[in-house]
Length: 114
Image (cartoon, rainbow, N blue to C red):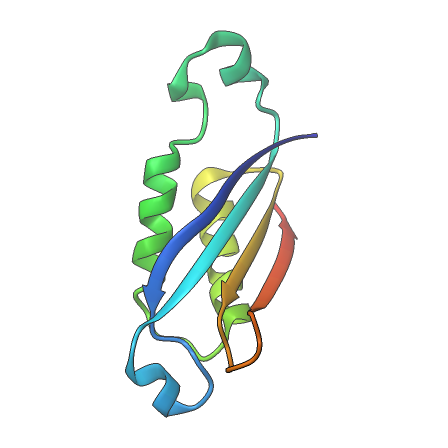
């Protein structure tokens, strides 16, 4: 199966379990891997037969404007939007954030079929 991966989309959003943590926007990174047949665009070189990366990235940024408690919830919401709007066979979404001093980061990764 083919895949298209958009790596480390930088976002600022309000995210965290304690209310105090959600008072300021936090830097997060989102990676999206869409699995499906890329041959229509690959064989034709016609970008209209593929995924519009800029539109997808903007859709993710818009979705991230809503406050959430967990990175898992954001990953689920992104996966649902991608499946509905872009129709891949499946999607894999990773959301990364810096959680605590002394910890480099926490990442939630989910994969959902269409």
